[in-house]
Length: 208
Image: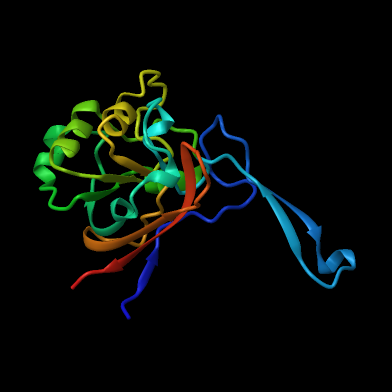
């Protein structure tokens, strides 16, 4: 079996996150150090912490919720595009990148910047870049930050351009060890009824 590459963040207290989100927390209900003969924990976290998907319902009132998304959108052939050195990604960039699959993962300078914290002006997608991808038949866009929009963009132009077309957004990817190319993506969010977003474990497998 070919190597699986984990591109998910580890959930832990103090992890890098979008500034408005609460931290991840763990409470031990039972633990060996507390005199119990077992371990049992409870966790608390926002649904958009770490590696997660945005469903259309996140910003589209009648959009699909996470448990209604076709798994075929979330799993299958994916193209990893190297966008390092770019401040934003527009239609011209994606045309030059020669998008060839219906799932696109984007490695930017966000990957490196996140190592020093999450308080910075992120690389982002423009509305016309998102429209270009949707017009090409892309059904999933993966990104190495917690937000595909420019920091402070209250219109959420990138989110709206993707989610209004039914394109699923996969945010918070860890793409350090991954080189550009074609991979097989497996992305399975938690199956919680009625949510607008959900944490997931995302992994890649190299294609021949």
